[in-house]
Image 1 (cartoon, rainbow, N blue to C red):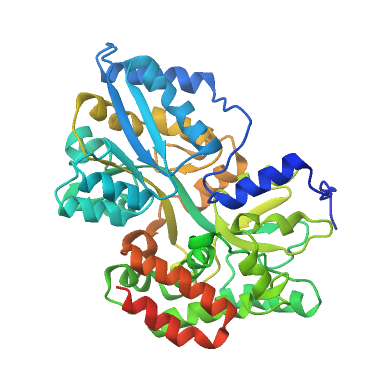
Image 2 (cartoon, rainbow, N blue to C red):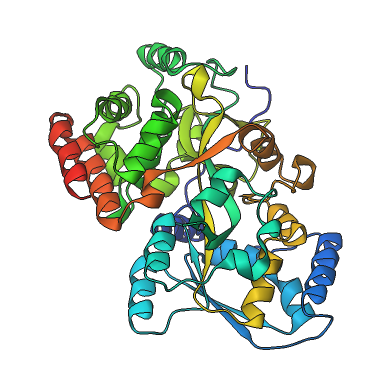
Length: 451
C-alpha cells in the first residue's frame, strides 16, 4: 500500500524541458541547478580556521589551477567547500571543467603546460603520468600520516605507485540498487542475485516491468551498463576477477565476464523487464534512468546506479523523500563477497609543487574540508574520519553506514584503471550487445583486443 502520494508527473514546461535537455547532455555527476549552495556555518568556520593554520595565519596569495570534469551545481558545491580556504589564505582556486578531460589533460601535459592539479575520475591517469615522471609525490607534500589511517586502504592503494602516493581522494561514489519503496516488494536483507532476480521475473510475468534502464550518452552510451556489469562481477565472482580485468590477468572473454553480460542481457533484452525494451533503453538519455520510478503510475521499481541517483531524482521529483520514498540496498550477490564494494570518485593529482598547491592539498585531505564536502549532500567522502552523523543527507548517511563502514573493502572498477581504448570498447560493446543479443562473443573479443 502506498503510504503517501508522490507528486504526479506533469507535462513538461519550457523550464523543465530545458532542465531535462541540460541533464541529458551532462553526465549524471555534472548537473546544472539554479539553487544557491549554502553549507553549515560552523563547518565553514572550522574549515577556515584550519586553512589559516596551513599558511601560518598569513594570506600568502597566489593561485592553484585545477582541470576537472565538474560543472553546474556540483562545481558550485565544490567551490562552496573551497571558499573558506581562499578566504583564509588569499589563494585563488581557478577551476576549469571539461567533458573531454582526458584529451585536454594529455594535450596540456604534452605541451608542457599542465594544470597545477587534475581532478581525475580515472586512476589510469595517475598511473600514466606517474610513470612518465610528470606527477609529484603528494604523500611527501602533505605527509603520509594525513592520508594513511584516515582513508580506506583500497583508496590509498589505488592512489599509489611504487610506494609513493600520487593522489588524494575527496568525493566518492558507490554503486547500489535503488528502489521505489512503495512498489518494490522483493528481498532487501542481503539477497543473493538469484533471489533478487526471481522477484524481478515474477513481477515481469505479472505485467509490471521491474527494471529502470536507459543508457544514451552520445559517445559514452553504454557507460551505465558498464558500471552495472562491473558491480555484478564483484558481487558474484569476487574481487580477484574484477581486479584481474583491470590488471590484465583475466580476459574479458572469461566465463565470469560472459555470465555478467548475460545477467545484464536477461534484463536489457526483455521488454517485460525494461520499459520500452532495448531500443527505448538505448535511445533515452541515461540521466533519465530513474525518472520512471516515480511516474504516475510508476514504470519500473529498481535501478542499479550511483550514490548521486538520489540527488538526481530530487531534481526531477522534488517531493520524493529519501528513505521514505526512495531507498537503496547493496548490489545483491554471494555472501562471501558482501564485504566488497565498487567505487568511483575524484582523485587530485599534482603536476607542480608550490606552497599554494601544498596548502590546498593539505586542506583537501583534512577532516574539516571533507566534512564540508559531505555536508553538500551530493557525495560520500573519502575520509573515514567523517562519521555517518556528519552527513545531513539521510541517503548519504546510510551509504556511509552501509557501503563505507569498517570491514568493507573498496575495489576499483576496471574502467578506472584500464586504458581509454578498453573503456570505449566496453561502452561500444554494451550498445552492440543490447541491440544484438547474438553479438556477445564478438563483443567480448573486441574488448579484449583493445587492451
